[in-house]
Image (cartoon, rainbow, N blue to C red; front, side, top):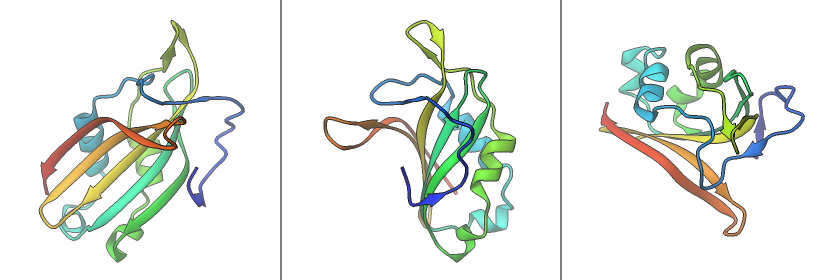
Length: 139
């Protein structure tokens, strides 16, 4: 999905979340799990945004497939994929009553004062991402 490829994640088949969330994950908890693994002095210096395509298998294991990193110099040195893969816990995705593998898009935006996290789906009809969940907090 994004230009920078990270892993194929052994993802043979999966659904891309659209307008519905299949892998349940509290967005504010997700942000906390990520930020807890970044030095607080670096968090205050982060600026820009990063989008990451995340594969969630039928057991809730995560693997980052691709990303678009438009963060500043400080942000480019942080391995967000490794943090997400090793430090976040997801529920197994449920689609039509059955566990399945999915992909979702996570967007983190850092401004001078705030951090915004968005869970995004892809709308094929409109040809773009839609916001499924969002949370913002002060740095």
